[in-house]
Length: 243
Length: 243
DNA sequence: CTATTCTTGTAACTCATTGTAACACGGTCG
DNA sequence: CGACCGTGTTACAATGAGTTACAAGAATAG
View (cartoon, chains in turn cyan, red, yellow, brown):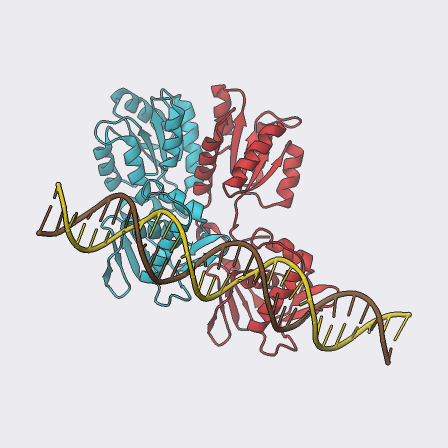
């Protein structure tokens, strides 16, 4: 449900080829989008801090940090949809691209019209309130008095105490929080953590869940926030989650 | 009507080539999905009427009604995500496919692994957190002082105590409460629980009912809320039910 | 560069849930 | 009154989940 006033969707293009960048920017502007075009990962990050971006078109080959890495990092802390472009038409790259969390993939050179169609398809599915896709806001997740700062990697308890967490616990909690109220299978959880976490087999999720609960749930026998669904997976059920 | 999150995601494959169909079905089943495979549009519609489908893999070339038309019709009345497959590698077809409302497109023959990755990607962005779009009303059921929160999976007794319940008991109670004052056969109950519960044979309902009553009915010999109808099934008869 | 500590995958064990069978109870119909 | 049928209940086994323990690997300190 979207209560926002009509607004232009803001695309961020990341590509080192200036010509292509400008071409795409003009094309999408003509089709009613707000567009920002930058040339590398550093500028991308700056843009994300300054704007509320709705979708990123990301070239795989970039000077400095490469597209795959950028995409993975991005996915770790926000749900902003990403469409990857690459000159290498290898099948493996496509798969890796998708597994790293991209929402779609296109080989270069690509027809702007097709890219536009895919952008629309992705946006149609992605439309979510800005507090999810928002840059700054996504780094801090709040629920029932808890505060998870994914950038500083800190978890603050309701009593203000800052807890010591391992990367794994933190990532898992962030995935759960981002999918609150939804039953997630172990498989889905692993899927979300792919790249941020070695991906072994399903029982390690149980383990990590157990470790998380030990830190967060006062009464281990009846968890309040992280519930188990037999044969299903886990649900994160804080009373309120926002921002 | 079903408002609860599905445990297994249910894929519907529509392809006229029996071999491919079976191959895909097996592959996805192995990866934890529930799969139904049919060969044309007619069967597809029947399947949609009988099951709660989460995603459709749709071949463009079909006997009878063609994939594009089916997809457009589908999109007109539901949001079920669709991934289109086609043997013709024409670029135009890809674009048309996306414009017609498909969520993704893949040329045939396609690598099952890639298809799986795309299915996951689409499902990931399709399943929005249910508290955003979902019907808030149905999540908390109230009756005679009891409160059943299906989302948080908790049952609160009239005295305010939160009871410890297994998922099975909870699901059963939720089905009963949603059909209050109506006699439900064991068959119907099992039907409602399909997918959310192992679906064995009818006596397990009796068992679960018994376990439920033990928790909810103060006097086991004369149940107040869950009544038995001989040769009929069970009725849930709270004095007042509010959603 | 090595030692120590922290993290996390894996296995083994325990506990909880639930399907299934067996039996008990009670009403119904001949 | 007695055999039968449907339901309630007890008991048990199978499966899944929680947890403890440990070892391998990564990170950190010295």
